[in-house]
Image 1 (tube, rainbow, N blue to C red):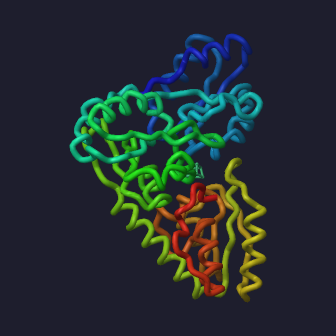
Image 2: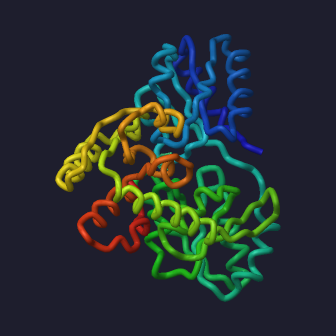
Amino acid sequence: MIVIDEVRIFKEIEDRTPASVSLNGPDGILPQVQETAIRISKKFGIPAYVLADTTWGTCDLNSNGSKTLGAEIQFNIGHTINTESFEKDLFLIDAFDDVEFDSVAKKCTILLKGKTISLVTDSQHLHQVDKVEKILTESEIKVKIGKGKGQLNDGQVFGCEFYPASDLKKEVDAYVFLGQSNFHAAGIALSTNLPTYVLDPYFNEVREVTEFAQKLKKKATLAIYKATEAKSFGVIVGLKEGQLSKVFALKIKKELEKEGKDVQLFALTDITNERLKNLKGIDAFIQVACPRISTDNQFDKPVLSTPQANALLKILRNESIDEYLEIPHWL
Ligand code: SF4
């Protein structure tokens, strides 16, 4: 069950007495966010808006939505990073999953006995890392926890940022991800090229995602090669606050034009196949927002992320694209 740090939310409201607040969180915890909003309204008698658009990470807080509503405080819940407040009047609130990993951790000891592994996880399960480390260590598995960097805590990864995993690439045999997210685990497998397992406490299941990750890579690589045949490109700037990357968009435009390509600039908040279908005369797209939009979704035309776009330029210049995803940060 997801437990939101309501004590902190209530304290901020008591201290700052806002006329209204907004709350948002990842889709998976929206029901709990709704309950917290109801409790705020009852306790303080103020409007508490649930911003129900997606918030995929601290790159996508939807603080513009909160400002438009005139909410005096925004609580973004469930994206624990190594800082508590971000913009003025925006607080990052912890939400932990209290599910236990004991049973599933014991299951994986048979599989990984004698190996050196690195434990990694997402925001909601960070508090379980030490406990699982102890269980694995007692079963003759050597455990390493990678150091945090930037916004990442020790052992934490985002969908596009893998420093704690990448830093240990030469020292471990495999990665073990705590949680249910094949999305995060596949990212680790792709950025390290090492076997990666998910310890899923809900299904009490240990599953390897290495093959799934390879399928994502094949799809991503195919899109790059298809894009080499394109004459006209659309370069898309993402309009989500933390995903705005105009500098790279203009750089890639310039580089593609040097290779004789026609390039048009676009900007979108949500980059979907449906929105792109409205745009005419474009053979392939490059989007410089969230790289996982390109690697994890289906599009009719090639839609390349930043590392794929870099690989495309290399192919156009007859350079090798080996290991183009094996980097600690895909932006
Ligand atoms: S994977 Fe996408 S949503 Fe997640 S942190 Fe990276 S850019 Fe943001």
